[in-house]
Length: 217
Image (cartoon, rainbow, N blue to C red; front, side, top):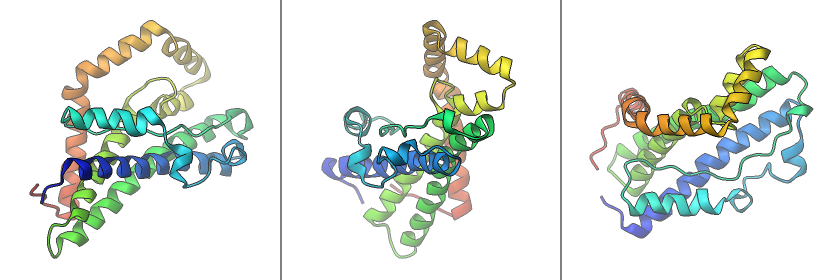
């Protein structure tokens, strides 16, 4: 079964919205539990997608990837506002808030894989195709959020939260340098096919094995 271009665009925007909104909501709710009510007070702790849509990350960037027939799909929504000064135990709480986003993607991988397994019992349907696409998108979000040590990324906050204070300050000073940021971006582009993409494929392979999934499209 194949989808036309309109269905493909609708599917990816739908998946990006669900995956990215739940990712950011995980950050927001964890922050709320740990003492920061910033997102709640600003009305951001809602599943209303309109509140979270980022024109560039939710619409424009995915459309560009689709039009160029990219092997990877990626998108984002507006980040959840969090004030770390409201946290009771900053280093521990920053770690928990940061890791909650990728964990939400991991949970969604298993949910989409379960849906794919159920729909495959009878025959392949559009739900099966959406499910496989949901698995791949959430693997991408999981890996990139953890491995890309860019300022403001989950991986960056996780690393800074577990480092001793002096190394945390050193990391922040260097990572906010435009030169270092350029080097990190360049390194990511060069090593994507060598390191990051193979990691994503390994995770995908084991998810398929675990759920006995055999996509044929």
